[in-house]
Length: 176
Image (cartoon, rainbow, N blue to C red; front, side):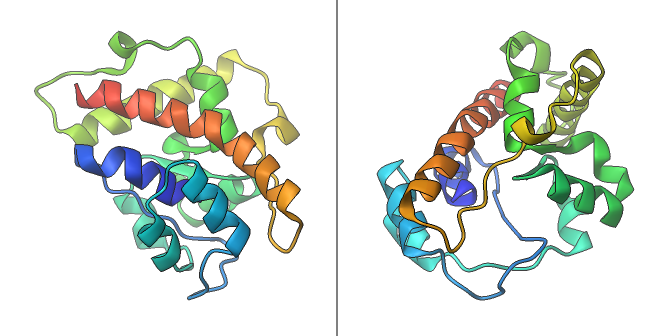
């Protein structure tokens, strides 16, 4: 759900958005409630229908300028797979929490460097804020709705949305 929502917002700006799971059911489509909620939140219906799960592999991590997970456990798994990506790996709620109060001027970066380098530099700035804030554990997790009722899917979407808005805000600032 997060991938297709971010893709809709960021790919028109030249940002490539991909997702992969640490426990993915490779090749499976999004569940019906996830598709319906994603579409309701503005996702492209064709993208929601076409989406298929894939398993997270190390090369994708090294190619990524910003890595977002749904849970602290997934973030830890990513960092175990590729310790060098630690400073650009966040849970979605953690990213929202850490970027609250950051304005465009703080993350815009040096226009003479590539967009990818500016995005990675912005991620490092966000990472530096981890030391200013206490770890919140469960507050940094998004509930996994898989095989649960629609209300849990809606709860999950409500936990994802603020983080996705924060990602859009920060990435948009970096691009300008």
